[in-house]
Amino acid sequence: MKIIVAIKQVPERDAQVRIDAAGKWIEEADLQFALNESDAYALEEALQLKEKHGGEAIVVSAGPERVGTTIREALAKGADRAIQIVCDDLGARDALGVARLLAAAIRPENPDLILTGLQSEDLGLGQTGVIVAELLGLPHATLILHVEKTETGVTVKRELEEGWFQTIELPTPAVLTIQSGGNKLRYATLMGIKRAKTKEVRRVTAADLGVDSTSVVVLERVALPQKQKSTQILAGTAKESAAALVEKLKFEAGVL
Amino acid sequence: MNGILVVVEERAGHIARISWEAVAAGQRLAAQLGLPVSAAVLGSQTEALAAEIATIQLDNIVRIEHPLLARYTADGFTLALQQLIEIERPTHLVLPHTYQVRDYAPALAARFGQVLIGDVVSIGDGPVFKRQLLQGRLNGTYRHTGSSPCFISVQAGAFRADGLQTSSNQATTAITILTPAIEATQIRTKPSQPFRGSSQTVDLGSAQRIVSVGRGIKDAENIPLVQELATALGAELAASRPICDNGWLPLERQVGSSGQTVAPKLYLAIGISGAIQHLVGMKGSQCVVAINKDPDAPIFEIADYGIVGDLFEVVPALIAAVKAAKQ
Image 1 (cartoon, rainbow over the protein chains, first blue to last red):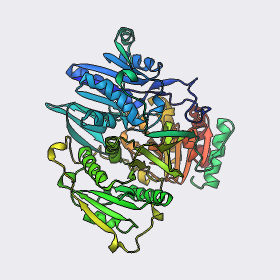
Image 2: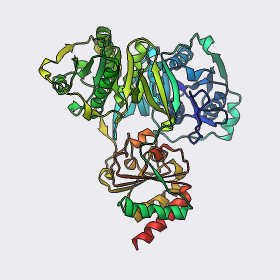
Image 3: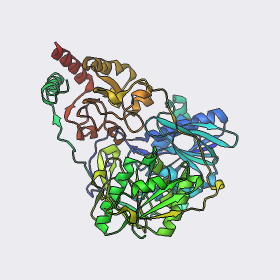
Image 4: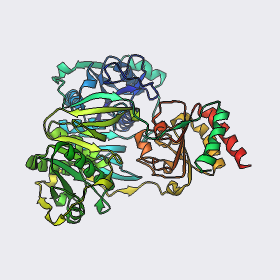
């Protein structure tokens, strides 16, 4: 099985959010970046399928130079090689624009399966995998927790709302967007980190792929959300604030 | 048509609540742009659903009917709606942001060279569309600059369905039937009937008090700390998704869009940042308390009381305070 995993590097979950001078995104200068969580589950699923059925797991990621560290992390966990789409204007491209980059890089590989996380933690669009499938003319399934190889394709377990699930049979090649929690994530071993240094990372640009930066949807500005409720923040030491909270819950809210 | 088209979804034989909200969003957009609103229903039998939606003030209702639409597939729904759009040429398509819409609408929009603006929480003059970024820590304002149609999907609870304009004379609302051209071979996926996960033995939905734990708890071995608080408060223990993903608590204790929806008198969120997927499962709670070390965590936006601090200091102090108050 030849499996492509499309991954994204995103700001660390606990990163301090400060809006940039143009008011269009956040200040990235002193941010820490990490592998998007559901993409980590997509990578894990790909590695387990490869270990079971043989083949190759190839990661592809678009973004500026810094994305290289996340690609190395994926290679250290066990991916065989990588394609890095070097692109400094990723944020200016809409979901279709990003999917065009990925589809153009994936197409010549002719994979059996393309996996990606169900959505990114920064933009949260949850569209990339579905659009890649559309652009490549492949069937897809979203919110997948488990993948089983069959004679003609794959059978997948899909999460629905409120604790419901369904299975879906798809012919391969196909695109699956992976939900978190289906597998236990592995850590990179020391040996893996060492090996990753010698693995192939092929670098391509948007121009190499023949993809322009036309967008039909524009993020015009960003702002901090306004509070929906007026929260009473109980200050003081842990002991003081805990005592104040019990007091409030008992006499003000009447829920104790 | 050349107006706004709302695609409504069915749930257990009726128009789902979030679809009524999508109609409300469509009417909001229509008022701003001076355009008519129509609605479309898809399925193998749509007469009852069309009658249900006809109670609302609409220009036109389209029943997209085909035996191959009996069960949802991305291929079937994309093909059917593609044909409707090509015939009716709507300026805007408004959809409910459900798991189903997330599964096909990005592909449908791409087929027209457009991009879905998904999970919209409000519509401003322009129109511009607001959606959340960075797990709710930031709002983004989006504008569609492409050609028609503009595709948007609206977040559950973001638009109020109780303000819908009802039809003065529903007998006159035009209802048309479209039979799309779909071949069985064009449906590439084979879905099963939905099934329930593990048998649910914990009913968080009827709990009066819930202590819910998130990523901030750091390790499985710290779970007993919050369990002790739950016991002291006489509360059920619940969790956000990452805790159940890690197997630290069973899935049946998960609150949020993929878990249970709860509305207790007291919801105590410990080390939970408050991503939208979690908030939709608990925002009906009467009193929300958040304990988090990050003062910017979105959970504080919907909390009545907040303590900004290290949960490993605050929770033991709270256990002591609750026990003391009981004596």
